[in-house]
Amino acid sequence: FEQLEALAMGGMNVARINMCHGTRDWHQNVMKNVRKLNQEKDYAVAIMMDIEGSEIHMGDLGGGAVSVKAEIYEDHGREEYATRPNYGQRCTLWTI
Image 1 (cartoon, rainbow, N blue to C red):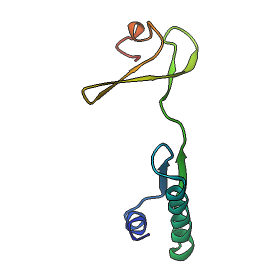
Image 2: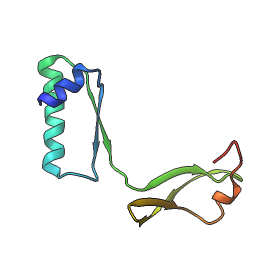
Image 3: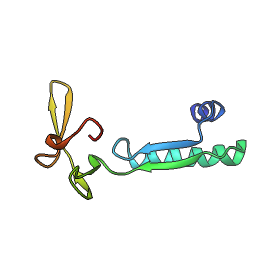
Image 4: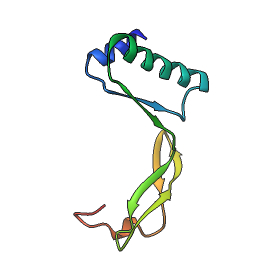
């Protein structure tokens, strides 16, 4: 609770909770403490839940927009994201 209060005092207005990490009890405890902070200390900190993993929103670079799931490959501590073939080959100086 004290750490959340210190963040709110420093200007935090949204508490982002990454649902891919931690336990259900931990997430519930964070949300409870944010609500308590708002009620007892008169802050207005919102709760944002990050619920999706490796999704990338991108354009087709040759047409309409699409969403694709990324495949994550780990290579000596580095992550690479692969999508559909030929997406990267159609990049320009102004469009990735």
